[in-house]
Image 1: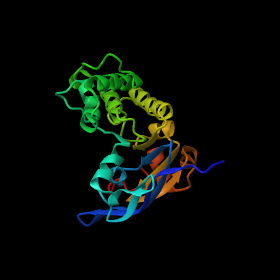
Image 2: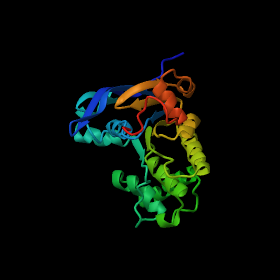
Image 3: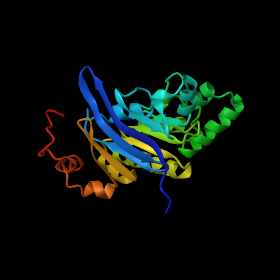
Image 4: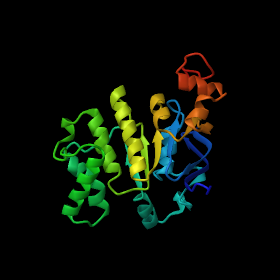
Length: 256
């Protein structure tokens, strides 16, 4: 069996804000084609780690390699080219309320390519079809449900045919049924489009529905990395308390 390719490698990164260490020597490797979930409580460093992975902030020490290249050492042109290989699905969907669905999804294509508007329109319709929103292209965001807004955000994230898609709390604020729909969509898109997916979440049901591997963060460190089954069977009391949502245990709820 051939070795799996590491598409994204975080190597011993640290990051402090205002004297507070948010990331403390974090190292993870993400394989091409997998769904890698980063979970942990509020303030554990999940979103900060995600921002390092997409290159929007630089570590105080350590490095992030994408396809073997250090993100912090790229020229402006190289960075722009590299980021076209990323897609980002934001927690709030981040849709522009004064643009309709088609205009929102077409934004990356309009800004980063010189494609003819008619070609862009065809691509947008294809992407909306992939997320189950055929015929919704002329609706305004205010006319959409929370779940539909999330799906428009997903369509925009895959507009440029990225290799890696990052999801920041993709099911936040959704009811359990819509959560399941969004989770299925993440899995389906990953398989159909051969994507690598990096998902930040604290929704335990989502974690165990979608993940190939999971990293548990706590106080800026990686406590454990493994398959969902390995995480479920972890001997670490912090991991067990978190996945079971128990009040009693080593996690100090007041501190957290």
